[in-house]
Image (cartoon, rainbow, N blue to C red; front, side, top):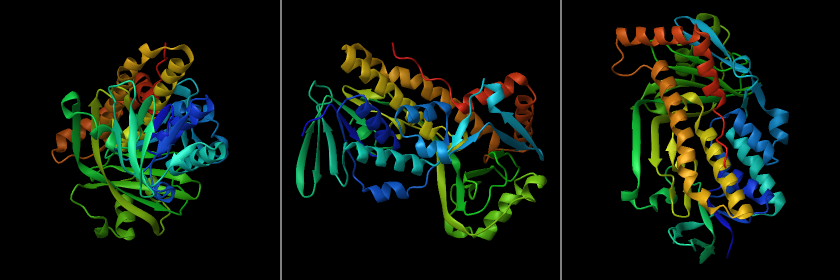
Length: 394
């Protein structure tokens, strides 16, 4: 087999890159080790930055998103028994975020790819990139009992943190930056109306909490738990009681509880690998970086990587600008590190750490009070939350 761009991974970043390239007339094949049902079964975040929303519209997969997604003009920071609203739209010149589940984004992209007749090879085992430093890279994998070779011009590694793409790069050429946090998020999904029409991030002496949603009738709530906690130890009743304790009284009394339809604990870490490129292999999304979910940046950073590689490849195939290929990593990393900073900052001021004493907690509240009480502080939070602009490819 032969194609122009071989994409490893059929998650949202691989599918979005494939969709954009296909519409631009650049041939691509996606190779995925799992089946479509498994990919769609993964429950993930769903707060989309303005830049990602615009990119999905550019990719022509916005019909259901625009019909069912929830546009949010702001969110609230709860601390010291009160709520302070960050007016995203007013503070950023009209930019907003969209609440639309990652599973739905993936479904829309899968359906668009199938309708276009583009090739996705699921259930591919032992995927391995080769010749990444040469002018003729290729993939090998096993499918239906046969070994397949896929020749290509470039390889996009969109296969996540545990995928083969980053692991195929010689370790001595990579620099890894990592911080593992000593807690996780216990999250539940419930068929209940949201307690608020916007997200609420709460700092409390018992730990962090988040009130989120997937739709007007489906909610997603989180509480910070210790890294050693087990899901089995948390009944629905225990979860709801703990969540209420961590919210301002006026919010807690409005909370509608119900049986959970999904419950899990997500560990938190910050992770960046440099560079995000090895010859003709490019790393995108979780293959290159992880952020704690506090700033809602994980999926959105993957989208900005997609935008960068897509626009570089447009110029490579359209104008012969192969000089731009070596700029991919530096362009991506400038935005990645700013998102890492914001996610770290949100995590630091909203969570209770093992070393958080009375002094540290008072500093957290003072930091929140300062930023929410300052026009410049509110603007800083807002412009980071809606997403910093994508860098132009020139």
